[in-house]
Each structure stands twice: as structure tokens, then as C-alpha cells.
Image (cartoon, rainbow, N blue to C red; front, side):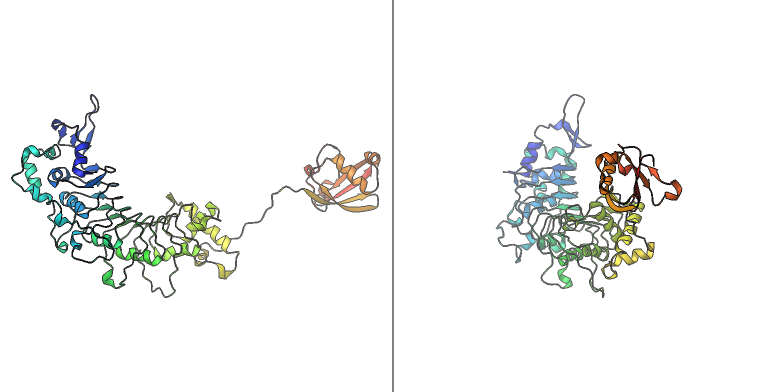
Amino acid sequence: MTTLVEALQRKFEALVTDEITPLCKIKIASRSGKVPPICTRIIAMDHQEITTIGDPKEMIHIFHDMHELDISTNQIRLWSDIFEILECSPQLQSLNLSYNPLQDSPFFFELDENDDDTSNQQSDSPSNSSPSPSEYANNSNSNPADINLLAEISFSEEDRNENCNNSGLSLSRNPSASCLSPQLTILLLNSTRVPWKRVLRLLTYLPSLKTLHTALNDYSCCCPQDSSDNSFPQFPNLVDLYFSENRLTSWSDVCCLGKHFPSLQHIVLLRNPLQTIPIKSATGDEETPFTSVEDLNLMETLINSWESVDALNQWFPALKSLRLGKELPLIENCDAETFKYDVIARLPTLVSYNVTTITEEERERAERDFVRRFGQIEEVLRPQRFWELERQHGYVAPFVSVNLTPRKTVRMRIRFDDQEKWHTCTMRQTIARLKTELCALFGMSHAEARGMRLIYIDAGMVEATGPEELRFSARQLYTYHPNDGDTLVIAQRGA
């Protein structure tokens, strides 16, 4: 177990002061002539067993210009530590807190409130934590000898003092009068199990947030118990929502997400057990909270009906990109290519399916095939999209059924003198064997059959070609292309 400051010190312990450069702050010499820079604007400290932040006095200088921080998969439990990071990092744009056990810690502004989402609140709070970074920075009695390499990243004492005086947000205990981070645009809370109600409360103080990751948090309900407008705080700046691998089963909960984030352009619902997307009623009373969504991911959900696919037209009028993958229950009994073309035909606004661009030729083929197939069933069973496409493409005739399977037998008329019989002949047999078989129909022995010959009369070509003697005993019957109703005449040689 360690602090973030200690982990940073271990990471950069091999550095010396003369390796600090203005361009990228820090350089690590690898071999002669090769000195790859390490830029402290992007810092990854995942899997470091970090439990707390440490002494803010030693982290304020390195974090002052930091833009991205990854502290995922650690053991940070207190939001007070997270708020100290935000306070010390006025330029921070991306923060990854995934896989930290933050679910039981209250916010500093919740200490005097009753939060229904938290069953066991921690006794720790920011008011009991270490002094804020700005308090440390303004302490004129700090001993310069105690400032390690991380503090030396500022290039001059004047710059360092200015950074200390101006850094931090000096969070008040009244959050309504402040924001936690005015620059933060990306926040990852995957598998933190932070209650959804608390996530919404946090977003209130992150006004610039555009991308939110909340996968693997076991969310099963996103709608507040109070359905009034006041219970739906809105965050119009958020455009990307990653809500994968939660437990949403109701479309109403998905709609609640749209109400909270009215400007959403990209939403990922991967591996949520969502089965049905309802068709809107004829009255159209339901709201459409996804008017701006252009990219939707429903891979590995439980969608099991074409009506749910049709409903996407109503709920996502601006949809351009759709991902359904190959593991929906709806796909199990369908050919993959046929399913793809069905989806393209049903959703006229799509330009990409499963991350593949839809060409004009593919769309026309899909739509015409859709009209052709559904034009052959009863009208009451045809989807609404059929009528729209029929008006666009007109009537599309069904394909002609052509059986190209090789025939095994043929029904032919057999004549001998004034006698006539019908016989089913095997196509793949030699003429010699066929002659013996046919002669036996009229009581001739094998020896008598040798003195006979076969004459083939093609019923369709007799006027053009006339009778044809089957002279080659080893040739098979199918090579003459006989049809049902043709005639074979048994005649004596020399006759």
C-alpha cells in the first residue's frame, strides 16, 4: 500500500535535476544518442496499490500542468482524495478512476445529508483530511530542502511561487458556489460501484464534462422515484456515454439516460440485458430523448424481435452508425448477410453498420430485396417500412425458381414393334446396360438384346434433328440430355 506521491517518486527516482527540460519537463536517457522525453502532461499510475494521495505539498507542482491522469485499479476509497487531485490540477482534462472502491465514500457536501444510495458511509471526510494543496503552497515556512525532484519540475523559484499561489480551486464547503474542475472533459468510473444518484450529483460540479464511462457498475435502474421535472437534472454538455455491462432491462430506464443527457451523440449499451425496444404509440405522446444520437451500440444485448429494430427509427431519428454484433438472439436463426441487409433496409438514416460503411449499392440492393421478400407475404404481416420502400422502388418481382440439381431418373416411352410401355430410366447408366434392361421389358434374353439397337427420339427436337441411334455402348444416358416424355425405340440390327 502506498500514496500517489510515493508512487510518483518511485517512478522517477532515477532522474536527476539536469535531465529536466522545458519542453517535456523530464527526460530519461536510454542509451548514447537516444534520450526519449517523458511528458508529465500524461501520467499513468494504474496498478500501483495506491490507497491515498499523500502530501499535497509535494504533488502540486507536477500536477499543475497535467492534462491526463490514470489512477485506475488501485485502492483509493475516499472522494476527498479525488477532490484534492482536482484542486491541484487546474488543467486536468481526463481522469480515470476505474476499479477503485469508491462506492461507500460520501462527497464532502453530503456529510450533512442523508443519501439513500449509501448504506455504510465512511467516517472520513475532506474536512478531516490533510490540508488543501493551496494551503501548503502558501505556507512561507516550507523548507526548500524538503522539496524533492517532483517539486523541482518548475524551472524557477518565481514560477514555482506563482504556480502555488494560483493553483487549486479552493473548494468551498458550499458546492453550489463552486465547481470541482472547470476543465475536466473525460471521466472514467468503470467498476467503481458509485451509486448512480451520486454520479449525477458529481456531474453537477463538472460543467465541462463531455465523456462519461460508467461500465460494470451493476446499475439496474436510472429513473428517480420522483418523476417530476426537478428530479431530472440535465447535463447538456455530455455527448458520449459508455454504459456497458450494467443491468438495464427496461427501455424506460434507457430513456431516463436520454433525459439527463439531452445532447448525447454516442451511447454504448453493450451487454445490458435489454430485450425490447417498444414501438411508439400512434398518438406519439412519448418523448424522443435521443434526438441527437448518431452512434448507438447494442452489441450482446438480448434484442429478440424485428419490431425492436424498427423502433430505432422513432427513438433515434438522427442515427447514422449502429453496432449489433453477431450475438443477438434475433440473429441466431438468420444468415449473417441477410440479417445485415434487413437492418440496412429498415433503418434509412444508417451510413455505417458494425463499423463498416454502407455503400449506395448495398443500400439499394438491401431495400429492393426487402420489397421483394415481403411483397410475397400477406399484407397484414408486412412491416411499415415495406410500404415506404415500395413507393420508392415500385413493385419488385420475385426471383424465378430454378432447380439446378442434377436429375437422377427420367420417365420415357419405350417402343418395340407395335408394343409400347412407359419406363423410368436411370440417367447414370451405360447405353449397353440400358438396352439390356429395356429388352427385358419385352421378354428378350440377354443374347437377343445383343442383336438390338436403341433409337432416341427427342420429343422437342424431332422435327429439327430426327431420330438418333445410340451407337456408343459405353456412353451414359444423361449425356444425351433426355427429358420426360421422350421416346426410345428398340429395333433389330439391319432393320
